[in-house]
Amino acid sequence: MKPTFSRLKSPKREAIEKALLEEFSSYPLSDATVARIVEGAGISRGAFYVYFADLKDAYLYICREIIRRVHLSNPGELGAGDPEKYIEAVKAFVGSTEAEGYMKFFARAFVDNAKVTQEIWREEAADPIAWAVSLLCHETIRSIYNGSDFQECIERLRGALSKLLA
Image 1 (cartoon, helix red, strand yellow):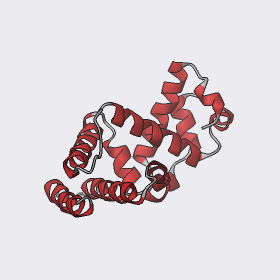
Image 2 (cartoon, rainbow, N blue to C red):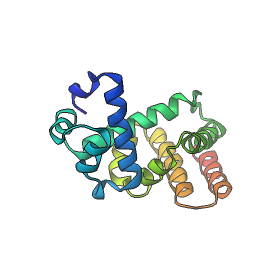
Image 3 (tube, one colour):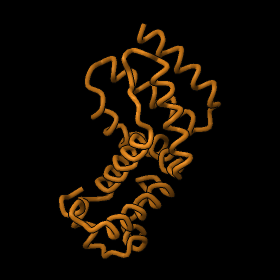
Image 4 (cartoon, one colour):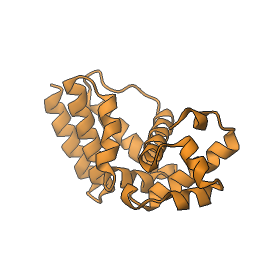
């Protein structure tokens, strides 16, 4: 995202965010188009490029923004070596994405756009244990969104985290 986007007035920024969310919920990044986004947002193609370098930049922006919103709606502390805190965070994340209408977006983010979305996950985990925990939690979420049994995924995560954090 370019600095010009952050200076937009709220209604215009919200219209663009809504169009981005719709596009990236409906299509993988590889099939997304600027044309549908600008039509949905009611802006010109040139304006899109004033706000974003390209589609990937727009995708990363909306992905970070939706992650921020979901995490803000689920305040709580992660970690301290407690597997149950991570499990509760995964459950809350999945529940929130469903309740707030972000399920389609995240299903695509974890399945179709995983390679690009991983850029964001890598930014969050600095030390090796945090990275491993992040990887396990995100893989659990991806499996759930991909249709695997929810409870089975949670139990597998619980077992892995219990051993990793012992």
